[in-house]
Every structure is written in structure tokens, then in C-alpha cells.
Amino acid sequence: MLIATSLAAIVVTISAPADVKSSLVDRVTAEADAIWRSAGLAITWERQPARASSRTLHVIFGNERGNATSSLQPLGWIRFDDDRPTLDMYLSYANAVSLLETSRDSLGLSHNMTILERDIYLSRALGRALAHELGHYLLASKAHTADGLMKANRTASEFFSADRRRFAVAAREWLQIAARLDDAVRVASD
Image (cartoon, rainbow, N blue to C red; front, side, top):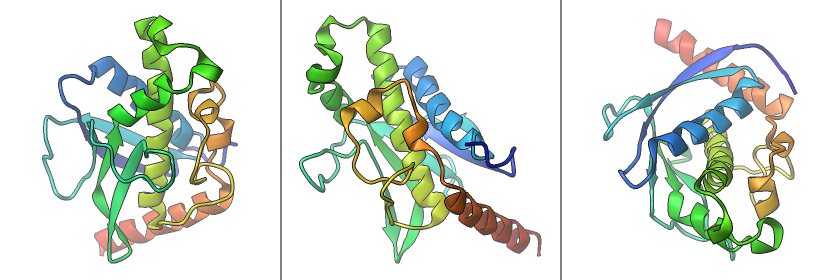
């Protein structure tokens, strides 16, 4: 659903270890960008070898497993301090690979896939997880919804499908985000 065209813009820095290919990171950010661009948010992605500034939203790719809230391992997370999102997000490459390897009923055996096929599936899942975590940051909320981008638990087929419609930003969420970003711009210019 197209809500607006570039009503807002943010800068996000990214760091990834050497074992996470640059091309995969590009596909992950492209997936997250496609979800947010359709809602009207322009994202500038900047590569950083490590955290460069404490004032910029930062995404870290890695192999940490995080805390499982159910039988599912999280693909991404953002910490909150005193109900405020921090500027650091984490994407678990290890958990995404694990999800791909255990999704043989819907995708087939991952070891039979080409490297490109694996990367496409992994980038869809991680990009959608990244878009979701950006939602937590932009909404300044830990809350989840019954559907759309901010839905808490996903199936493997939702994460890996070529169709990303189930990850759409709801109009009510975008209105909250636009108001919050507008307030931040007003405060910064005062």
C-alpha cells in the first residue's frame, strides 16, 4: 500500500563480519528498503566496519542467537531502555540460516540450493526482520500487531516468500511514525 512518497528520511549504519557477504547485506537492505519505501520512508544505508557514532541508528549483522520467546529463534532484535528504543539493532545470520535449513517442507533441502538461491531466501528473511525492528525503533514501541509488518511471530513461508505484502506498514503506524519524526525534526531545529 502506497501511503506517501518520501515523507521522511533516516540514516542507518550497518556493520557485518567478514563471513557475511557484502552482496547479502546489499540484498537485506534492499528488502527492508522496499518495505519502508512503499510507506514513504527513505533510508540511507551506510556501511561501517564498527559502530562509528552513538547518535546514528546502527544495525549489526552477526551470529548471536538472542533470546527465544517461544520455540522460534529471533532473526532480529532491538533493546529498549526505560521503554525507549536504543540505537543498536541486531540481525542474526545464524538464526536465519537455521530457519532456512529447517524449512525443507516448504523450500526443499537448503544444501541442494545454489548459493544465489540461499542468499535470496536469507536476504528476504533478514530484510523483513530488519524492517520489523526498524518499526519498533520508529514507533518507539515494543508492541506487536495481529498482522502487517509489526506482527510478532512469522512462518518460514512468510519470511521466504517472494510476496512481501504481509509485511506492509499499516496506515495508522505510518501516521504515528510521521508524527514522531516531525516532532524530532521540530525539536532539532529549535
